[in-house]
Length: 140
Image (cartoon, rainbow, N blue to C red; front, top):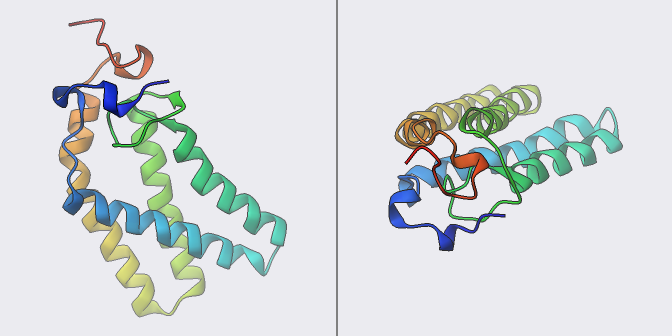
């Protein structure tokens, strides 16, 4: 397990409040909208959606990509895919359950969050071996 506190400043992603707040808003929308969209079909599916949408990013992540510690290290492409999956869920669920203006607003926030993540994602992709070496780069 890697703790962000044990990493140096150079090992941390370029992530600021301005960049991370829209990403968190997208996560919140996914956490609320997906179960809301599913509860009419199955309460069990709604509960599973909440567990997966909150649990998977809490357990899996790339060391240094977020300020929180992670349990299971994954590579940058997988970490980025998990973030993008939450964004897709947020938009699809918003379109399914909310009026068009609200769904458009969610889509705008998702795009803004994605644009704000480019620098962080480039940083993540430039760190080969970080996800498998407890924060140490075997190449360096």
